[in-house]
Amino acid sequence: MIEMQEVYKQYPNGIMAANGFNIHIKQGEFVYVVGPSGAGKSTFIKMMYREEKPTKGSIMVNGIDLAKLKRSRVPYLRRNIGVVFQDFKLLPSLTVYENIAFALEVIEEQPKNIKKRVMEVLDLVGLKHKARMLPNELSGGEQQRVSLARSIVNTPKVVIADEPTGNLDPETSWEIMNIFEEINTRGTTVVMATHNREIVNTIKHRVIAIENGRIVRDELRGDYGYES
Image (cartoon, rainbow, N blue to C red; front, side, top):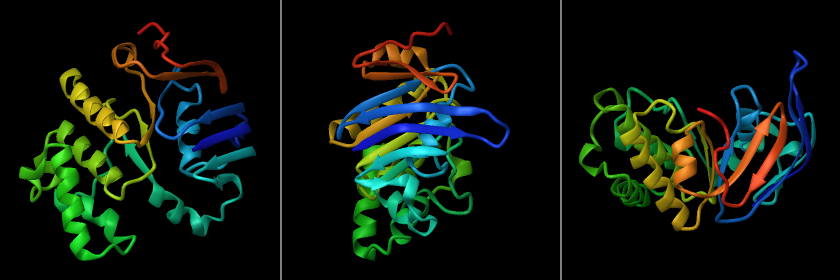
């Protein structure tokens, strides 16, 4: 599903954010990516959906080598990857329904299929009753649920999340995690960068720890491992 071989990423300022990553993530796995701020977690995550390109090495996602992928092909890659951000990235002038439908419209899905699929994912995240609202009429947790629904509406094989509970209160964070668990149970691979110690230690999954651009720990049912 996702494989990195001898991946290096050096930024123009000289910072080495990835220093020889070697990782294999199987279809259907749930993986937490943890580590101190500035360790290289976001670079790790961004390279998986080609927001960042490695300086050296191979990154295979769904059988595609991202290091060799032409920029014009990146949108096609992302049709099979859902991305969830800390700051939601919803389109403010579109309703909840329209924000989610937009992800299907850009891949030219049939209109009749769009409505059915959007309502399915809204039901999954518990927001069917708010389909006609605008993002600024929702709470932060509701906006993140919309973001999650948008990320899975085209049934991606993998969902990549960068600090998805970072701006949410603890109760809302658990609600979001329950949705991620349901998505994973249905067979979608989930890779999540997080600083949330309690979530990682309670909902056990594989933990990859990154420090100073190096993978220092890779445990099947690991703990967060850092002081909060």
